Every structure is written in structure tokens, then in C-alpha cells.
Length: 578
Image 1 (spheres, rainbow, N blue to C red):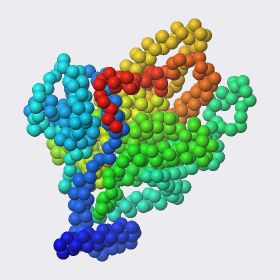
Image 2: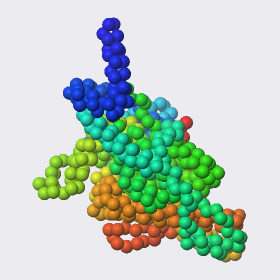
Image 3: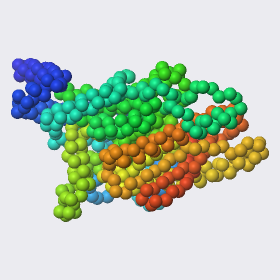
Image 4: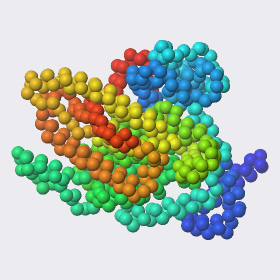
């Protein structure tokens, strides 16, 4: 009994000490210099405690996540070929030997409920079996899975697996990153940024310049041809929302400042994603972060900004979103939960497309780069050292392990191209070690071509009806543009001034398209009652590697989208469990 009390007292003392040490910056730097051997020893046990406690905690999962995954399986069964579904399912398993039906049921149960198969209730197991039956029926022409379970085939259930016990960084590492972060934050404050909080979200905010932006030539032309007198008020420029990736905000400060120079009148929202920012592992870790709270906090902050500065105008609430790497996963959640807030989107090295495949999870958590696997000449390639740095600096850091094993759920963050009902730009790196960039590029092209066929058929049907009524075909300038940079690695789009300014130029183009769409939507509101179809337009996909441009039809919001309806879910006999 006395040993239990002693352990409890020691835990209280250590918790109090580490809490005071973390808050005492920059005084803790001096303390570390004086007592670094003792502090490093204590910190080693602190990280070990963090890994053990976090391993026992569970991913935040809700019935809404289950419903979203059910919609995904509905879409996959309807859109994908039997061969593609077979490749998708087999990719999530490691090891050798035949893949049996029990292994697939384990995977399907995890995707639906984020739980091991043994812990599923009778109703949950029944739901997983129904999805599996539909998948096996779809794959019947190309594959069969005998009953049973093969223990040699290990499924990558990363949210159920323990954090890697050798994930460790010394205390000096976190003090250095903390110092760099404080210097960056001081620079942001000097440039007019403010650190704000809204619910669970903390974010940097810049209100933009007070002066009104100059009118674009297109808006001047509209005023000259308007039948009513033009008003002196101009619509406010849309705010910019920058979503950083793994490693925190520090690598993105040059991009933020470049955006400020190029678009000084636009307000900026820069949410802080604490679960992937290389913060010091806490001695007493709180429950894993629910990223839905960050998304709802960001939506509330944008609406509050629109209400306070622009009288709550709906157009003012729309923003231009810029996401990189893990930030595109948050962008995907916003696109699905609050599509009305996204006026335009820029996705750099996006992990959100094809996230249901194994590539991102396997490359980040399971794939260990072999030193000089391709010979000594590999040591002279900067990309080789970049990949090693990515692996040992980020993948094997305790809080990043937690971010991908306890705070990252693919069902929230996967994105279908038709979820982006706005002008958008995608930048892919041909040598990306995490994102299957060439496969994503082909996937986006195929989806654009398929959407083009559906929209052309719908446009032909509506054209005859419009000719009878005397109304012309609807049009829109919404599109998606893709750049595939064959020689870039993941994150290189942010590493040079030329690459950053290329992104700024693309963002300016997105803002112009967004403003044109808003003006066109305003002029067409008077004729909405004549139309029974939503606007559809062509999507421009540009591939830097091929050096040519192709045009595909792309659907906008409404009847052109192909998201499954509730009736389709019922036809698949997939129960939605709440």
C-alpha cells in the first residue's frame, strides 16, 4: 500500500515539474543548459509514459464516420471495376499466403467502426458482413475468397496498433523546435498577425489591408453593361485559409508572407493543427484530438468573420483554401461538411485523393527506406537524403505517430473530385515518397472524362428543352487544373521562391475565377426559375510532364454530381448504424 502511495506522489511531483518546465519558456533553456543530463534522463521516461498512455487510448470515432464510410463503399461498388476493388482490398494486407473471407471481414469491420473484429456487436458485425457480401459479389468475376482466417496475412489497422516504442526524440530537439516556432510567431506578430482562438481551434489571423482592392477589368465591364446604375460598393475579397501539414507552421511562413505581399487586401486564417506540429509530448496526454472539432471551429470562425466585417453576407463567408499534405485532409473534411464555405481550393501534394488505398498509410508508417539500396551513387542525390530526413525526423517522432495512429481517420479525410464544387488547382510531385502522384493524376483525369460523358448527355437532353423554351444553355467557369512536376519530391513546392510565387500566381487565378463565378451566379439568379438543371462546365487539366492541355467536362454542385442518394444505400442493403 505504501508503494502505491509513493508511486502516486512521485507521479504528482513529476507532472507538476514538467508542467512548470513547459510553461517556463525561455527560462527552461537556461535550466536545460545547467542540468541537461538529468533532464534528458527524465524526459526519456516521460516519452515512454506518453507512448504507453497514448497506445491505450482510442481514436475518436462517431456514427457519422460510419455513415461516411458506408457512402464510400456504395460509391466504390458502383464506380470501380471488379479488378480495382480486388487490388484495393488486397493492398491493405502484409505477409504471404491466401487471403480468406475472415481477413476481409476484419478489414471491412475496421473501416466501418474503427474497432477490432472481436469487439464488434452483433448488429455491427452484421453490417460489416453485408458490405463484404456486396463486395464479394462485385469481385466474383475476377477473384474468390474461401471462408476462414489466415493469421499470416496482417491487415494494416494502424489506428488499433500500438505506437512504435522506439519513437523518440531528445528534449533538446523540442527546445530547438520551440525556439524556432517562437521566432516565427514573433515575425508573424510583427507583420500584423494575431493569435486567436475559436472553440477548439487556435489560428493566426490577419485582417488584410483596410483599403478596398482595385476593381478587376471584368467587374468594370459588367458595370459598364449593367442596365441598372452601378453601386460604389465592391464585394470584399475572399479570405485565405492556409492549412499546414506535418511539422507545424514554421515551413509555411515564407508562403504566408508571399501571399500577404501579393494579396494584401485578403484576410488570412491560418489554423494551427496541434496534433502534427512537433509539440513536446505531454506527461499526461489528453484524449486524442477529434479533427471534426477543428473543422467545426474553422467554419464558425469564418462565419463570425463574415458576420462581423461584412454583415453576414453569404459570399463573404466563402474563402480560398490552401492545403498542403496533411492539410489537404482537413480541407477534404471542410469540403464534405461545409461545402458552402469553399469558394476555391488549392491542394499541394494532396493525400486526400485515393486515401482509401494503402499508399499513404503504408509509405508513412510501414515503409522503412533502406540505406543506399540502389548503390553508393544514391548518396549524391538530394532526394535520397530528403527521404531519410522525412523518415527519421517525422515518422519516428512520438506525436506524429499519435497523429497517424490515434488522430487520423481516412473516412473523414478522403476526397472524391466531385466533392470540390469550385475552381481548384492540384499540384503533384512526381517523386513523392508518400502520395502516389502519378496514380492520383490518372485518377483525376479518368474521373473528369467520366464526368464529361455524363454531363454531355445531360446537356444534350437539356439543350432540346431549352431550345423549346428559348433559354440558352447554362455555363460555368468552375474547373480543376492539375500540375504534375516530375522532378519534385514531397514538400518541394514550398522550398524555393520561384515555386512559391508560382503557387501565388495560381491562387490569384483561382480568386479571379471565383469572382467571375459569383458575378455570373448573381446575374443568373433572376432566371433560376426557368432552369431545371444545375450549371456544368469544362475542366482544364494541365500536365507539366506531358506539356499539353486537355479539356474535360466537370460537374458543379447539384444534379451533375454522382454522390449516392439514400435510396442507393438502401438498394445496397447496407444498414446505417447510429
